[in-house]
Image 1 (cartoon, rainbow, N blue to C red):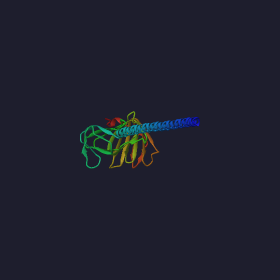
Image 2 (cartoon, one colour):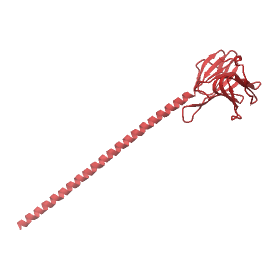
Image 3 (tube, one colour):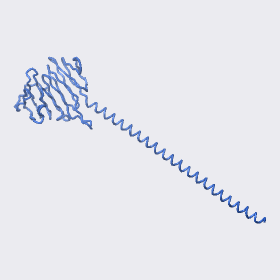
Image 4 (tube, rainbow, N blue to C red):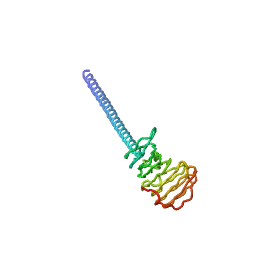
Amino acid sequence: MAKQWHQLEKLDHKSLKKLQQERDKQVVAVKQDAERKRIYIIVVCVFLALGMVGALLITIKNRNAKRAFEDARQLLLRATVTEASGDVYFRSVGDWEKLSKGFAFEKEHSFKGNKGGFLAIELQQKNQLKLASGSELVVFPPDLHKEENKVVKETATLRSGEVTAAISLDGREILEVEAAGVVALGASGLFKVLYNNQKGNGEIVVKNGLVEVFTRANPSKRVKVSGFYKVTFLNGKISNPTQASVIQYEWR
């Protein structure tokens, strides 16, 4: 009987030991599973943090790039008065103000020179507009490319008098000088627009280079005027080119 009890105790001990081992294995498995979950959570959090940092850096980079793009775009609107002598004035809104050399502007401005006054304006692409004595000119902000920081058109309107346009290498075929609905597009070189606002007539004289002349009403019909030639206009009608004695004009 004692032997049987001993055998039963031995079996119970083995069962308990086996049961304990299984419980220990379960505990280890639970701990391992918990550790794997913890590591997984840490890895996910690290990747999320890296993703957020990356997104933040990209946002900052894009914001800085956009700011730099806008700053550069704003500079493209700027024009500068490079010469101003005699009795010359400007205005944006309001009364006329005395003008001096170095004046920079980005919005629409009107300029005039009284008797003896002279001024020169340099646009963004180095094109120049030189306003003669007794003349009035309106300079508009340039048209910019929608996606690139690039000037696509520069525009000025001669209200009365005389303006000389000098076309730079970078500013070809973008400067338009208008008078009474007649437009002179500077392809290259040096040309002059004269307009008598009281009589409604004027002329466009080309010293050198090439100018395309057309009306706002019919921009597809263009007259090409080359060096030592000119066209006259009256009431929106443009004459055929004729030879011009360019030495009779002031080209400073």
